[in-house]
Amino acid sequence: MALPRELAAKLGKPIRLLASNSQGEAYAQRQKHRLPERHHEFIDDMASRTVYGREPTPKQHQYLHSLFFKLGGRIT
Image (tube, rainbow, N blue to C red; front, side, top):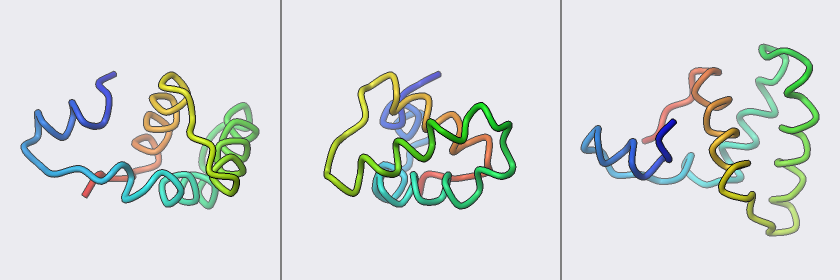
């Protein structure tokens, strides 16, 4: 899966990483009931990291974006 910046470049659209990482994580957390339970703990962990200003690793960021897209999220 392409990273968000690469995907945005292909689409020719400007990118704000999920509007901001915390907004994307909050969206995933609100919508996590639509995903299998195995993803819930990861989403909650990523959302709690943003409270303390900790960034996800590149691999975590990519996985979070894949879940965001599965939930119908869009990069604007």
